[in-house]
Length: 177
Image (cartoon, rainbow, N blue to C red):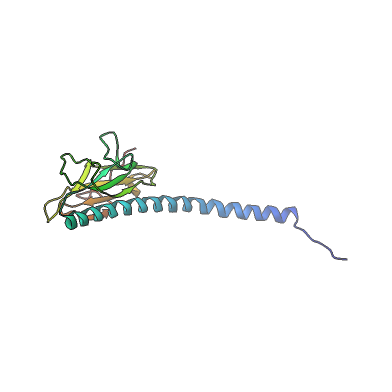
């Protein structure tokens, strides 16, 4: 006769307590990991857009615009911020202020994963060909952790992006919610 043996109630309770302790330790770290991954993805998405726009302006010999967008196909106004998304397009007709017309190629569009705020001190960035001065500015990426965990992409007059934890002149970054 084969004898089957199960677990006692005490053994099951001990396993549940150990699992609860491990979960309590792991969950805050997992939350921070997810927030860091989302922020990094969005910062990299913006840096990619800047590098693409800068390179295409040189390649095409035409102004290329990176602007905030709500619908992914046209630049947003003052009611839209970069936390809704951004796009890159060639400004073939040289509109001022730039706007994407039907015949102008759209090169890139991005919708951020960050659930915080993405703000900029410029409504758009225009990259000009042949080494002429481009639009400079700063875009700040914040999540619910606030300014301490914020990152900023600073775009220079030459169109080169750099990522920093501090704003221009090194003051603490400001987060708006």
